[in-house]
Length: 322
Image (cartoon, rainbow, N blue to C red; front, side, top):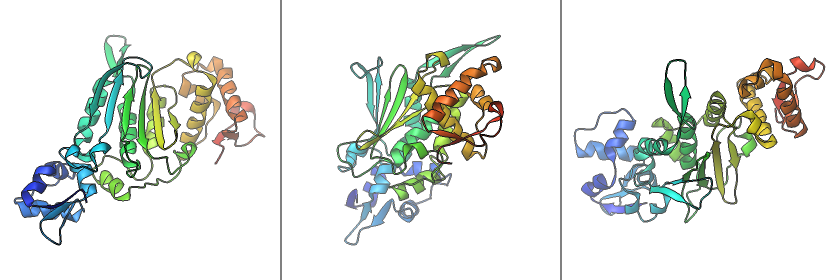
């Protein structure tokens, strides 16, 4: 329990109950009893055997008006930090989220996207600004950090750090799935009730397609591949700003090639030299560049050839685990 033996008025003052009904596209009940009954059915609150109502940890972490009002959950509020350079020495702005994850999710994304720099694209007749990172990719990674965190980890909370060349999204708790298998392994969550409700609110998906969307959006923007890391006790996902192929190092190219192969495989397709050229924006006359990237990725053991008896130009490739 996050709070115990509260009267009805206190429950409604502490929880953003209108957001609950908005997220479900359900009408707000006409009376207080209807509101409390609906919240109780989803285990956000429950009757106290002695007197009044209890607010569960699930109810507070999702719909608290202010997480700081719940002693055990105050440190679970997400932090957003913007730095003025490539490192963490100069902080430009820092904000700690106050609302519960579900009630404040759209506002959180609006705040984050407002801090992300834009790139100006010059078309034939006009200019337009596009965000440096795909909004859908940011949304999926932020949702993942909230849902898959280790809520038993003390003194740590999800964090979004925005640099001039990248955005890093970190949550406490090491992943339950190998980072190399994020695209294909069925989802595993240490917070099943939280994940289930966030799915009903259309904030996330439980079928495991979130990382697929991230990689797909990154390829659409022709950005360097996302990086998934596991610092001791944490999970970190990084999106990088646009960088031309000739400025990507060998590690960047190999990671992009591997994830490209993974994405095609989960779509019941195969990576080829042609698809990789399209992913990097390589001209057909420069197909040798794509061949070299494929060869480096093969040497790294991250992909394998589907059928080595066919000619080099027609070869198809799979992730190493396929």
